[in-house]
Image (tube, rainbow, N blue to C red; front, top):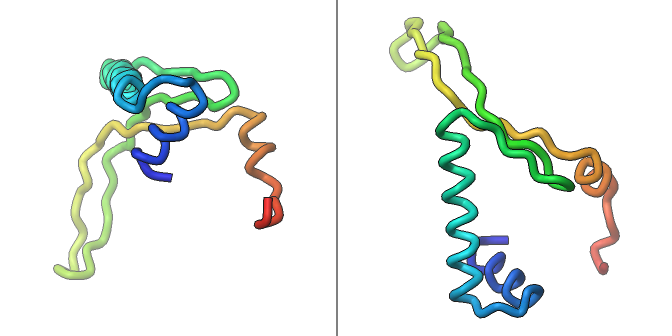
Length: 97
């Protein structure tokens, strides 16, 4: 599913126009991005928890230059799915559903 398909399904289920749905989704993503930028996690019931973590500095081999290089530390977004989501995704459904 891509962004436009998500907006279309959300607008059908909520009864709002696609324009209004796109504005709401855009604002929600903006709020989430700001929270994660500040280092604050986001917990969404039935979906999971988004939080940031720091990947430490590490030494890696670069085969192109045949030498080692240092990758600096960086902060990345991490996601832990909720138990209900894990269970729902865990089992394969028949394709004709």
